[in-house]
Image (cartoon, rainbow, N blue to C red):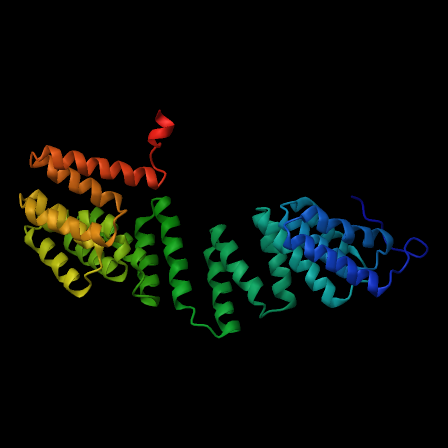
Length: 344
């Protein structure tokens, strides 16, 4: 659809009632997910009256929501070329343009548009938040840190956690380039801002292990697990192996039992304890722990698999077969395995 340029004799004013009716029809269509139906009354308005800036802005949003980024960009760029645009409308058109570039994946252009918006409104939270994210994505971490600090001041929020995550991202980028020493310093800075950032402690542990510092690695991984028990699947095997290498294998089970005493709902720790018990031949205790896990989380695939392995290792073939059948049922329910009907 082409929009006519405004100008004397080329556009006639439409009355307010017609504009209101067009917006009402467009809103109802959007609520019905009928985006084409939403476009029609708005497009008809601007064909008849090119001074309807609010309608152009609405069309730009509509095109962006439909994923038609080129059309949204054209609307906003054309608006910004107009000499009759009020400051409020110019700001909204610029904001729309920045959003278009961002959604379209035009990283450099999105940064430029949001910077222009920030220059107009230095405390604009959307622009500062977008610049923080976009500059980090572009690996311009100095710019990302600056935008994040300005955002924290503008909103009055404590920006320490957000800044710590930026340091973690910078460390990940440095690690990808093999710049481990710089990555370690970035992680240290991040942890000074947020000592509870589990992913940073995880990376610190990995770096210390690579340096041949198992005690430091162990300490870092323990802090990571204390900060976020969801990392247990990654950390429990590392903790167990590190403690064994240090000649302190029993401390692994001791630590798991202490964690479970503090938090009986930590299924990851209970599963790790079960595996450890099974490895040293205490199948009965291992199965008891696995049953406790499955009682709390009956759809947990790794617990079903662990139970089947323990039973098979004990030569309890009938029980192992039943456990495997239950595992297959869980996998089917979770869509991880073709159903029997599909196979047939």
